[in-house]
Image 1 (tube, rainbow, N blue to C red):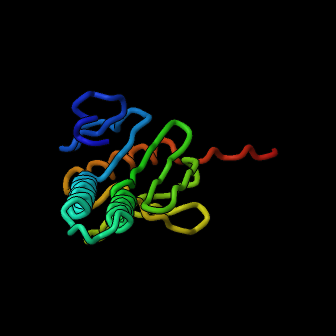
Image 2 (image 1 turned 30 degrees about the horizontal axis):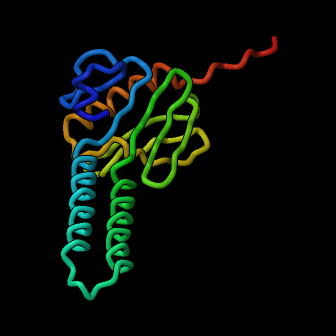
Length: 170
């Protein structure tokens, strides 16, 4: 959630400086701060530029050309939205990883571990089937906020992620 949502005190938010102490209550959503600011600011700039160009073009440009420029700006906005939309949501039952293109819904026991080695742009989660999944909803360029978000997620994972042992006949 962004700064505006954290300031409103919505349930399950993580403030931009990162909370100290216990893990957040559920449900909680983590979103990258810097990528959202840059992505949506550039989207506004691209669209405004294309609309302005469509208005000030010489009169020999047809209406379809002007609409084409605005449409091209909207395509740019869509691409930038895909880059700014990633998030990580944790609820009582599941974890939803929203990356640029795909969304993955996982049950807590499917996740083995979450880690973000130094120098990596975002964390990866190790899954019980042996595969890994990038979590673009936490990005290392957010600094302390990213480290705190990962620590909070790891705390939730270790408290909820263990599958129950099956009962043994005996």
